[in-house]
Amino acid sequence: MADLSTTRRKDLTKAQFGLPSKVDKGKEKENAAGRGAYPMPDRKHAANAKARASQEYEKGKLSKSEKEKIDAKANRVLSRDDLSSGTSKEAREKNVKTEIAHGKPPKQAVAIAYAKQRENIGKKAHAGDSKVASLIGDLCKAIRRFP
Image: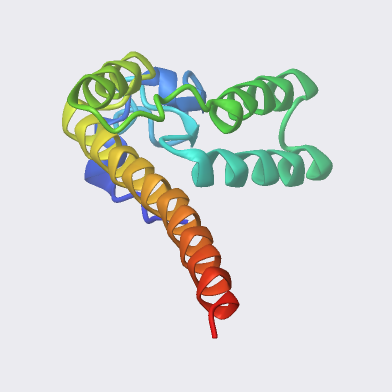
């Protein structure tokens, strides 16, 4: 799981927390900006939040409704696969807008969109590799027919 620095955690919006209103005792001043518990800026943090919430619920430190809120938020983050699979500039710009709409800071949204675009370009290249391999195989078969 990627580290979440204090600075980056402070930059998260309320929407990126499983329990945005939860404040630990003695940290009221620190949480004045509305930060909460169980941060979920990405899929790895969401999976971790679900696991930690289950542990805390089993220990009796978390109510059933709080656990359900965390699980629901984590499931939304984990199931989100709404980024475009295109490689064009338009697809990348659409992905930036999608990520910003999901609460990501603009710079992070741009980085995610570029990463998705590179991933999609790689997928297209591998799809092309199989076509090339098929053509080479056909060519080899044709060459073997001639003495």
